[in-house]
Length: 141
Image (cartoon, rainbow, N blue to C red; front, top):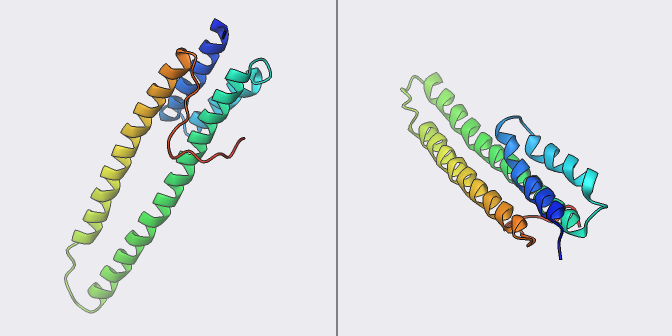
């Protein structure tokens, strides 16, 4: 049977991932600090801490990859626009606007999904269950 303190610590670790919306990288740093201070006291806390950190690190990696892809397409489009203008043509930045809108919608949906998953993980930890986030890479085992 899990102690109330273990459930509370695991719940706070999951919930602390949302601090990234207050300070950059806080969604990794805050759960890491909680996990490091309590991981040796409880296997439940240790397991949940790894899962929270794996999810946050996975999201960071996915975001960096997405930003690289978006940057590549944006730069390619801008270079093409410069070529057209140097040849005397007129440029209407439809492609650039499209890239921006697709990126905005994608990041918006991803953020909403992340928020829902964090709340779900928080509720599971509060019930005394360990929650494995989908699409999470196991950096910490």
